[in-house]
Image (cartoon, rainbow, N blue to C red; front, side, top):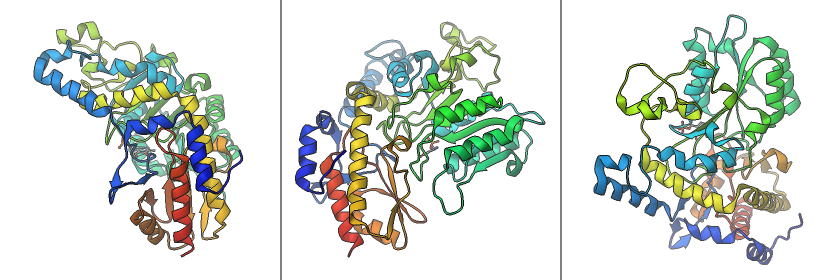
Length: 420
Ligand SMILES: Cc1ncc(COP(=O)(O)O)c(C=O)c1O
């Protein structure tokens, strides 16, 4: 990839970008009457303009049909979750019956742990990355306790080598091998939320299976960011949210993948009526009879209003296509990296891997001093990024709505404020 450090180059790259029209499908916040440079899609994706119409449709269905909206109207509510199956399956690389839109990341993680973490006296260890997203840490710790284990013994954390910021794949695989038949489950983030490191999910899955462990991933920072092939990699389960790269709105519905090889097994599960045989659900009978497929893990009737914006967003994804998005993403993030490195300011270090195969959109910028102050100054100039204590600014140019010009503007402001 060859780049130039000029606005002219950025504008030309935007003109050549076949996905550039998708930006117009999103509402970009304004500051002092001007569009901000929004680089926070790793935290909360922008609002698709179509989301209002999708929501309005459901408000209208509620007002026009009331309870009958479950079975009538443009998109009846009872099977509403089925509207997502084909797009989600394509985004994560699975069959449609293996994915379901439901709940939130942490709820889904607990539900999956109930089914897949079945510790014995000798095989009870849970492997995760050190500094995993806190909610995941709390979930794993309390799952270990729930089964009567001491989390400080049962939860094994993968640490980086001294002086390094990233986990080496060889160290992850070695830890799995060393844990051997003590390892019950690996449960790590697909893309690490703080560093932006994209782990080698395939080799992790293979080595964990080789020692007889189950493999799950938290894909909150991976879904909609990179193409995934969960089926081909033979992952056992995964969970994710839709409010980051999937632009579905704050707290919007999450999702889960459960490999079909587990669908017929007698896995333990916490059940609810939305996982019960659909034909018999309203007979209100005693005795849980699960649906076959990922839908079996659903608990409650679907939160249709937040699913409406999820649907609006996924229809945009379907048109753009994750492979084309990834192609643009590789260039956008590489352009950002190029501009930042060109400045050569020693106060700033990029934590995220330089190898594009090991990252998604996000770059995590580590500041050796004065980080929060710098963050406040760039924010005051219309950059929306996010600050992660103690010293990281995360920026994610998102291919659906960010432009090369956004990246150029950000890098220019960053440089001016760094060198002030
Ligand atoms: C990696 C990761 N895991 C878990 C969560 C928690 O998500 P939820 O609030 O949907 O449970 C988040 C939220 O940002 C996250 O980034």
